[in-house]
Length: 317
Image: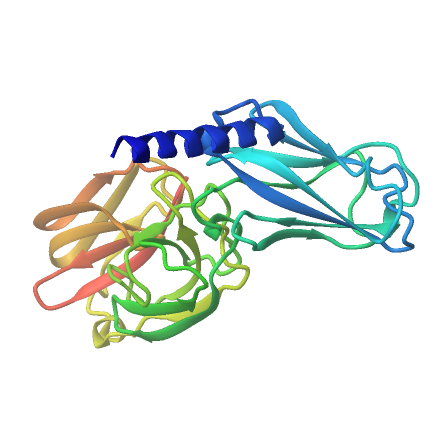
């Protein structure tokens, strides 16, 4: 038993010594690093002709590549990156024939996460950035083959293709069909694929995109494709029994006035993502809502009576 402990200690020491002797990254502990491979290519078999690129992480230059590639058509190098930390790859100034160099960055899971082809990019610029991950590659990729399966008046079933199986996905959902998901966009997190989305508005057009949620704090890239779909239209909207309904002003800054010839039982304010923000039980024909707490944007006002409902789009200034 004592011999086994000694052997494990020797192995751990030799592994750590090997990392320390080869690592270029001093911004985190060696046990928190993994190795990324960089393949450099030359179009005319003359190396990179003095071109070079530098990996930066945690505010420091980690490694410069390319200066040792002085002849031939291909050269391989490695860089040690800290787990779960942003990094950048900067194309430095200097060198000749930049259009004749190519580069591929390969993760520790042997997945190509970035390719700079011949003729692409410019010196003195950031050509790639990301968050290194030593447990999965999903943060560098995105779902594909997005599909709309079915819908009711207030729900939709959506699906997509994936190379990974994370526990969760983020869905960007909007009624503005010209809008695309951004890094700071609002989203809905779901636990399955296909995913059932609820609390949607009847008779409404939506667009969605999806991304991997790699961990609690990390996520992948939004899908490059988006899919449009519509929820079903109920008879209630067509019958329009709220004939004498008045809602003003619209757009609204702070206070929204509502009146109807018949009693309104409930009022809901719903975001453009289909999330209910306000629910009021009023049981009267008229009321005034204080919407000053809402941020500017598009919302939906849902008025509910005993036998009917009406949904109106409002704009909050």
